[in-house]
Image 1: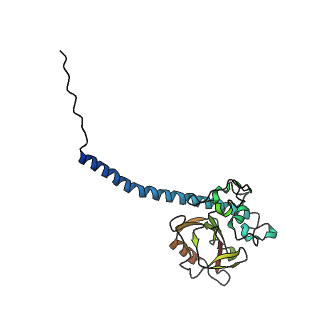
Image 2: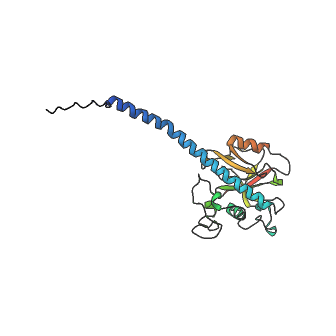
Image 3: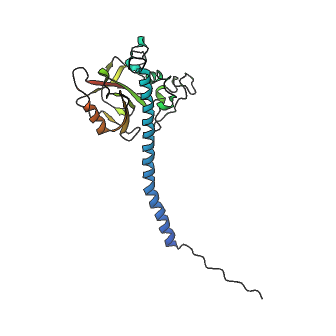
Length: 236
Protein backbone atom coordinates (compact mmCIF):
# COMPACT_ATOMS: atom_id res chain seq x y z
CA UNK A 1 0.00 0.00 0.00
CA UNK A 2 1.53 3.28 -1.09
CA UNK A 3 1.30 6.13 1.30
CA UNK A 4 2.40 9.63 0.54
CA UNK A 5 4.15 11.63 3.20
CA UNK A 6 2.81 15.15 3.46
CA UNK A 7 5.20 17.83 2.19
CA UNK A 8 6.56 20.15 4.86
CA UNK A 9 5.00 23.54 4.89
CA UNK A 10 7.26 26.22 3.37
CA UNK A 11 7.52 29.68 4.78
CA UNK A 12 6.56 32.47 2.38
CA UNK A 13 6.55 36.24 2.50
CA UNK A 14 3.27 37.84 3.10
CA UNK A 15 2.53 40.84 0.97
CA UNK A 16 3.13 43.13 3.94
CA UNK A 17 6.49 41.52 4.71
CA UNK A 18 7.59 41.84 1.06
CA UNK A 19 6.65 45.51 0.99
CA UNK A 20 8.55 46.06 4.26
CA UNK A 21 11.64 44.31 2.83
CA UNK A 22 11.57 46.38 -0.35
CA UNK A 23 11.19 49.59 1.64
CA UNK A 24 14.15 48.61 3.83
CA UNK A 25 16.32 47.95 0.75
CA UNK A 26 15.27 51.27 -0.74
CA UNK A 27 16.15 53.07 2.49
CA UNK A 28 19.59 51.43 2.57
CA UNK A 29 20.19 52.50 -1.04
CA UNK A 30 19.20 56.08 -0.25
CA UNK A 31 21.68 56.10 2.63
CA UNK A 32 24.50 54.39 0.74
CA UNK A 33 24.40 56.24 -2.59
CA UNK A 34 25.34 59.69 -1.27
CA UNK A 35 28.16 58.15 0.73
CA UNK A 36 29.45 56.33 -2.35
CA UNK A 37 29.20 59.51 -4.41
CA UNK A 38 31.09 61.43 -1.74
CA UNK A 39 33.77 58.76 -1.66
CA UNK A 40 34.21 59.06 -5.41
CA UNK A 41 34.56 62.84 -5.20
CA UNK A 42 37.17 62.48 -2.45
CA UNK A 43 39.08 59.79 -4.35
CA UNK A 44 39.28 61.81 -7.56
CA UNK A 45 40.37 64.89 -5.62
CA UNK A 46 43.13 62.86 -3.96
CA UNK A 47 44.20 61.52 -7.36
CA UNK A 48 44.21 65.09 -8.69
CA UNK A 49 46.34 66.26 -5.76
CA UNK A 50 48.78 63.43 -6.49
CA UNK A 51 48.98 64.60 -10.13
CA UNK A 52 49.81 68.10 -8.97
CA UNK A 53 52.51 66.82 -6.61
CA UNK A 54 54.16 65.01 -9.51
CA UNK A 55 53.99 68.12 -11.69
CA UNK A 56 55.37 70.25 -8.87
CA UNK A 57 58.29 67.86 -8.36
CA UNK A 58 58.96 67.89 -12.11
CA UNK A 59 59.00 71.71 -12.14
CA UNK A 60 61.43 71.82 -9.23
CA UNK A 61 63.68 69.20 -10.86
CA UNK A 62 63.72 71.28 -14.05
CA UNK A 63 64.53 74.33 -11.97
CA UNK A 64 67.55 72.57 -10.48
CA UNK A 65 69.37 73.32 -13.74
CA UNK A 66 68.00 76.87 -14.00
CA UNK A 67 68.84 78.58 -10.73
CA UNK A 68 65.79 77.06 -9.02
CA UNK A 69 63.30 78.72 -11.36
CA UNK A 70 60.37 77.03 -13.09
CA UNK A 71 60.16 77.24 -16.92
CA UNK A 72 57.73 80.17 -16.98
CA UNK A 73 60.09 82.18 -14.75
CA UNK A 74 63.03 81.65 -17.15
CA UNK A 75 63.41 83.82 -20.32
CA UNK A 76 63.44 82.16 -23.72
CA UNK A 77 67.10 83.04 -24.23
CA UNK A 78 67.93 80.99 -21.13
CA UNK A 79 65.87 77.98 -22.19
CA UNK A 80 62.56 78.78 -20.51
CA UNK A 81 59.12 79.85 -21.69
CA UNK A 82 58.87 83.45 -20.41
CA UNK A 83 57.77 85.77 -23.24
CA UNK A 84 57.19 82.83 -25.59
CA UNK A 85 54.66 83.66 -28.31
CA UNK A 86 52.38 80.90 -26.94
CA UNK A 87 52.93 81.71 -23.27
CA UNK A 88 49.20 82.29 -22.63
CA UNK A 89 48.72 78.51 -22.95
CA UNK A 90 49.47 76.39 -19.87
CA UNK A 91 50.19 73.38 -22.10
CA UNK A 92 53.28 75.16 -23.42
CA UNK A 93 54.83 75.50 -19.97
CA UNK A 94 53.94 71.94 -18.97
CA UNK A 95 55.44 70.60 -22.21
CA UNK A 96 58.81 72.02 -21.07
CA UNK A 97 58.67 69.42 -18.28
CA UNK A 98 58.43 66.45 -20.64
CA UNK A 99 61.81 65.06 -19.55
CA UNK A 100 60.84 65.23 -15.87
CA UNK A 101 57.26 63.94 -16.15
CA UNK A 102 56.70 60.24 -16.68
CA UNK A 103 53.61 60.86 -18.82
CA UNK A 104 51.26 63.71 -19.84
CA UNK A 105 48.41 61.62 -18.36
CA UNK A 106 49.05 63.37 -15.03
CA UNK A 107 48.17 66.72 -16.61
CA UNK A 108 44.45 65.83 -16.74
CA UNK A 109 42.40 65.60 -13.54
CA UNK A 110 40.24 62.42 -13.24
CA UNK A 111 37.23 64.70 -12.60
CA UNK A 112 37.80 66.74 -15.74
CA UNK A 113 36.32 66.42 -19.20
CA UNK A 114 38.55 65.59 -22.11
CA UNK A 115 40.97 62.80 -22.91
CA UNK A 116 44.53 62.52 -21.58
CA UNK A 117 47.41 62.54 -24.02
CA UNK A 118 49.71 59.54 -24.00
CA UNK A 119 53.02 61.13 -24.95
CA UNK A 120 54.63 64.50 -25.62
CA UNK A 121 54.64 64.25 -29.41
CA UNK A 122 52.51 66.05 -31.98
CA UNK A 123 50.64 62.87 -32.92
CA UNK A 124 46.96 63.81 -33.54
CA UNK A 125 45.83 60.50 -32.01
CA UNK A 126 47.62 60.79 -28.67
CA UNK A 127 50.25 63.56 -28.63
CA UNK A 128 50.09 66.29 -26.00
CA UNK A 129 51.51 68.91 -28.39
CA UNK A 130 48.73 68.44 -30.94
CA UNK A 131 45.72 70.81 -30.76
CA UNK A 132 43.49 67.75 -30.30
CA UNK A 133 45.00 67.60 -26.81
CA UNK A 134 47.15 70.52 -25.53
CA UNK A 135 44.92 72.68 -23.28
CA UNK A 136 42.08 70.18 -23.75
CA UNK A 137 44.22 67.60 -21.99
CA UNK A 138 45.27 70.02 -19.24
CA UNK A 139 43.44 70.59 -15.95
CA UNK A 140 45.83 72.93 -14.15
CA UNK A 141 46.65 76.62 -14.11
CA UNK A 142 50.15 78.05 -14.11
CA UNK A 143 50.97 81.02 -11.87
CA UNK A 144 53.84 83.14 -10.71
CA UNK A 145 54.24 85.52 -7.80
CA UNK A 146 56.58 88.46 -7.95
CA UNK A 147 59.77 87.79 -6.05
CA UNK A 148 59.07 84.03 -6.37
CA UNK A 149 57.54 83.72 -2.91
CA UNK A 150 57.92 80.14 -1.57
CA UNK A 151 54.29 80.17 -0.41
CA UNK A 152 53.04 81.73 -3.66
CA UNK A 153 50.79 79.73 -5.97
CA UNK A 154 52.76 77.85 -8.63
CA UNK A 155 50.18 75.48 -10.19
CA UNK A 156 46.69 74.37 -9.26
CA UNK A 157 43.27 73.13 -10.38
CA UNK A 158 41.83 75.10 -13.27
CA UNK A 159 38.47 75.69 -11.52
CA UNK A 160 39.78 78.94 -10.07
CA UNK A 161 38.03 82.12 -11.14
CA UNK A 162 38.74 85.80 -11.00
CA UNK A 163 37.26 89.00 -12.37
CA UNK A 164 40.24 90.79 -13.90
CA UNK A 165 42.58 90.41 -16.89
CA UNK A 166 45.85 92.32 -17.08
CA UNK A 167 49.07 92.37 -19.04
CA UNK A 168 51.80 90.15 -17.63
CA UNK A 169 55.45 89.89 -18.78
CA UNK A 170 55.42 86.14 -18.26
CA UNK A 171 52.17 85.31 -20.04
CA UNK A 172 51.27 88.37 -22.18
CA UNK A 173 47.74 88.24 -20.69
CA UNK A 174 46.77 86.70 -17.39
CA UNK A 175 44.35 86.82 -14.51
CA UNK A 176 45.67 89.05 -11.75
CA UNK A 177 45.12 88.61 -8.04
CA UNK A 178 45.77 91.61 -5.83
CA UNK A 179 46.95 89.95 -2.65
CA UNK A 180 45.26 92.35 -0.26
CA UNK A 181 42.32 92.62 -0.11
CA UNK A 182 41.28 89.28 -1.62
CA UNK A 183 38.32 89.64 -3.96
CA UNK A 184 35.34 87.31 -3.34
CA UNK A 185 35.56 86.54 -7.07
CA UNK A 186 38.87 84.79 -6.42
CA UNK A 187 37.31 81.41 -5.63
CA UNK A 188 36.97 77.80 -6.73
CA UNK A 189 33.92 77.04 -8.84
CA UNK A 190 32.15 73.66 -8.94
CA UNK A 191 33.63 72.45 -12.23
CA UNK A 192 36.05 69.91 -10.72
CA UNK A 193 35.89 69.39 -6.96
CA UNK A 194 32.74 70.99 -5.63
CA UNK A 195 34.01 74.50 -4.84
CA UNK A 196 37.34 73.26 -3.52
CA UNK A 197 40.69 72.67 -5.15
CA UNK A 198 44.35 71.75 -4.97
CA UNK A 199 47.39 73.98 -5.31
CA UNK A 200 51.15 73.53 -5.31
CA UNK A 201 53.30 76.33 -3.88
CA UNK A 202 56.72 77.42 -5.05
CA UNK A 203 58.25 75.51 -2.16
CA UNK A 204 56.85 72.31 -3.72
CA UNK A 205 54.17 71.62 -1.11
CA UNK A 206 50.73 70.54 -2.33
CA UNK A 207 47.62 71.51 -0.38
CA UNK A 208 43.86 71.09 -0.67
CA UNK A 209 41.93 74.29 -0.01
CA UNK A 210 38.33 75.30 0.45
CA UNK A 211 37.49 78.81 -0.71
CA UNK A 212 37.87 80.15 2.82
CA UNK A 213 41.23 78.39 3.25
CA UNK A 214 42.44 79.66 -0.13
CA UNK A 215 41.66 83.27 0.73
CA UNK A 216 43.27 82.86 4.16
CA UNK A 217 46.42 81.55 2.48
CA UNK A 218 46.49 84.50 0.08
CA UNK A 219 46.09 86.93 2.95
CA UNK A 220 49.03 85.26 4.72
CA UNK A 221 51.39 86.23 1.90
CA UNK A 222 53.67 89.23 2.61
CA UNK A 223 52.33 92.52 1.35
CA UNK A 224 54.75 95.19 0.20
CA UNK A 225 55.35 97.59 -2.67
CA UNK A 226 57.12 94.97 -4.77
CA UNK A 227 55.11 91.82 -4.24
CA UNK A 228 51.48 92.84 -4.59
CA UNK A 229 50.07 90.50 -7.21
CA UNK A 230 49.96 86.95 -8.44
CA UNK A 231 49.31 86.27 -12.12
CA UNK A 232 47.97 83.01 -13.48
CA UNK A 233 46.68 81.48 -16.70
CA UNK A 234 44.11 78.72 -16.99
CA UNK A 235 43.77 76.21 -19.85
CA UNK A 236 39.96 76.51 -20.15
